[in-house]
Structure formats: structure tokens, C-alpha cells
Image (cartoon, rainbow, N blue to C red; front, side, top):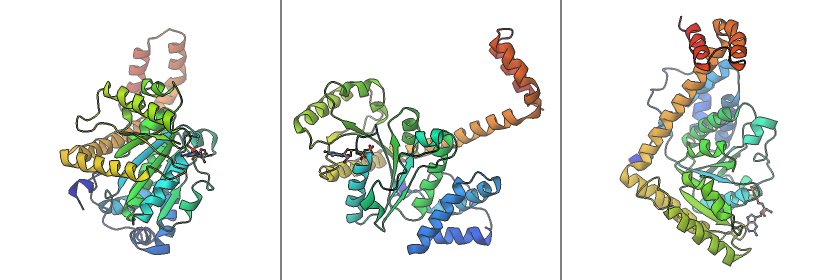
Length: 344
Ligand code: GDP
């Protein structure tokens, strides 16, 4: 295993001893066969639980698994509904499994955190992939805010890595915030596009292409010529943007997920990305940055929660927010007064 693929998701040593039930989970996740699937499912339930004691246990299980993580390549895939994400992931998953790999598919679905229903979690999607032993498809967690969903997805990612999955695919719908979150947890972020005469440059403007490490035009079988035109336009437009790395020129490829064409060329580029970035040290550096950003995210939300629950804040908050709204006090003065409440 290349050193660059080892875990950078944290360096804390595992706790001395686990409860027997949790040790069984850890052994199950690390172990083979049907027992592993059961242990993965149980561990995910633990991670997703909102109970404080479950959360504490989940952290212990993850800490014990941490030394076994980091070996997979993490690929994020985004695109608007209908762009063909599930068809593409099904084609890619089958391709990878045929090449001897194990594949986990995780979803971050912003709609699930708002409505409680998940469009990405629909089990009837990716039907042929679902049936393969070497694949594990986990729908988006349905509880909590988008930040919480992303956090649980990150933790699930570690579970699957410890279980020896080679490729972790994180899927998200192409709507703003969730894309940035997913880009922040993967090694390589892929944007799935449709050739849509004239609209292609719109994507560039939205700034989304700027976080993509690879752009794919799907459904090339429908109109090969239009796809090629769009592909070239975006490729040209990308040369005008400042690249995230001077060592990586974002490839723009055409595929047909339905006909399963172009999948091999796509994967060759993913491997080229990994090899190039590993060679320059950027692969590891990105993971380190992401791990630290994750930690600070958790600290920020924890501090915020602590602040809001603090009794001294509670006593003043209503009054001060009203005063700010009515312009009787400046937002700055109100903020400092509230922050003073938790100093002691
Ligand atoms: P998602 O919402 O992004 O997950 O999109 P789906 O994978 O569900 O695909 C939406 C529709 O586009 C489905 O009817 C697919 O069969 C179709 N589709 C996906 N990929 C292709 C492709 O490469 N060519 C064609 N012709 N249709 C495709």
C-alpha cells in the first residue's frame, strides 16, 4: 500500500478497552463475509443514533477502527436530478467490481434533512449493483441538518474503509451547499453534466466547476456531436480559470452510463489523478486539510450548541435579539454582551 493512502483522518490512539459489545462490532467490521455486513449495518445505526450514549460508543468504535482506514480512494459525484448519477454509479460500480474491487456508495442528500424523505436513498435505484456481494449501498441519513448528515457520512466512510472497501463513492444532488460539503470529504470530486446547448457555460459561472477535479458529460449516446461541442467548450473555459493545482488539468470527458461507454477511460483518469497527486504530496496534504476542517467544523457547531444552551445566554438572548432587530443596540455590542455571559 502506498504511504500516501494511509489514514490522515486523525492521530489519536484508540482507547484502552472497549465494551464487549463494541469490541464485537469492531471485530465484525474488520472480519469477513456476512458477519461483516451485519456489523457494518449495526455500526451505521450506532453512528446515526442521536442518543448521547450511542454517540460516545460510536466514537469509541471509530477510534478502534481508525488505524485500518485511509486505504480507499474517495470519489464524490454530483449532478442535478436526472443527469444520470445513479445510472453512472451503477455502471462504474459494476466495472470496478469486475476489476476485483469492493465498492461502497454513500449519499448526502440535502432534501432528506429537510423533508425526512430521501430521493437518493431509494433502494430501487442501482438495482444490479445492490445485488452484488462486493457492493454496499447506504442511503442518506434522514435525520438532522445537512451538516449532521455530512458528518455521519464522513464517519460511515471510515467504517467502510476499515472493512476493506477499495472505492468509496459519495453521491450528492447538485445544489450548492451539499456539493461543497462532499468536495470537502473526498479525494476527487466529479461533476456529472448534460450537454444542453448554450447552458454549459452556465455551470462554469456558478462556480461549481471550480471545485470539480473532473467533469463528465453523460448521455453521449443521445447526441454525440452536441456532447462533443459542450465538452470542448467547457474544456476551453476551464483553461481560463485558475486551477486548484498546477499539476492537474481538469479533464472533461464524455460518457454514456446507459451504454456503459467511457467508464474505463474515466477510471483511468481517476487513477492518474491519484498517482499524480500522490507523487507531488498534494493527495496527503488535501486529506490533512480536510481532517482539520472536519475537526474545526465539529468544534464550531459544538461551541455554538453550548452557547445556545447556556442558561445565562438564555436569560438575555430574547431581549437582546429584539433590541438588535429594533436598532436599539448594535449587533456588535449585543454579540459581545452575549459572549460575556459564557466567560465564567
Ligand atoms: P439521477 O437522478 O441523476 O440519479 O439520474 P438517473 O440515473 O436516475 O437517470 C435519469 C434518467 O436518465 C434515467 O431514465 C436513465 O435511464 C437516463 N440515463 C442515465 N444515463 C444515461 C445515458 O448515458 N444515456 C441515456 N440515453 N440515458 C441515460
